[in-house]
Structures are given as structure tokens and as C-alpha cells.
Length: 119
Image (cartoon, rainbow, N blue to C red; front, side, top):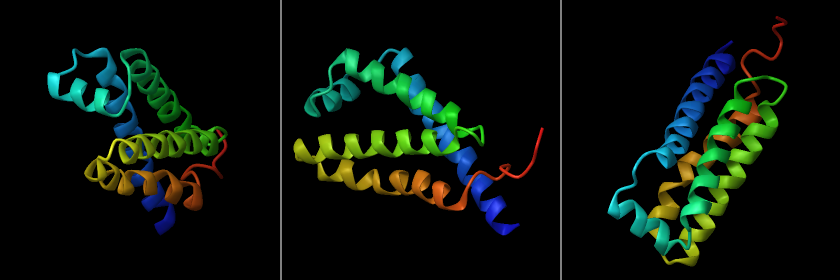
């Protein structure tokens, strides 16, 4: 029961973060944000693609049948961002991403909180 509660809380947090970060691509970016993306080697079209993938992976996490693939895509996306940050020499950005990469991995371990409930 406790693992279902923890999994549920992590699921909600992960989905919120995924939608929040993904939806930023549809807003006017700040100059500081564009500078950071440029330093990472991310063009505007890649930035939009990453945002859409973030939203799609967050959507997949919601459903038990696509839970694993959604978390896997999210983890890979975060690893790519960390790798780009390390390549650019931005160690602070890479270190900040560590807790966020742990969330989908812990969720995969715990499983979907509603996986044994049939609708």
C-alpha cells in the first residue's frame, strides 16, 4: 500500500514536470533560456521536438499499459539533456538533472499505482 502511495505521488510529480517543461516550448522563450539552449547546442526546432516528446512521454506515463515506455522515454530524454550539458561544460545543469532522472527510474521500479485495477 505504501509503495502505491509513493508511486502515485511520484507519478503525479513526473507528469506535472513533463507537461510543465514540455509546454514551455509553446511560450515565448526568455533571452536567458535561449542562451542556455544555444550553449547546449539545441536549436529552436530541436527545442520544440524535445518539448513535444516531453509532453508525449508524460502522457504515456499516465496509463498502466504505456507506463514503462513513457518512463523510459523520459529517462532517455533527461540523459540526453545531461550529456549535452556535460559536453557544453555546464556541470551545474547536469547535476540539477540527477533528481529528475531518478524519478522515472524509481517509478519503473515501483510500478504504476493502478496496474492491478481493471476498468
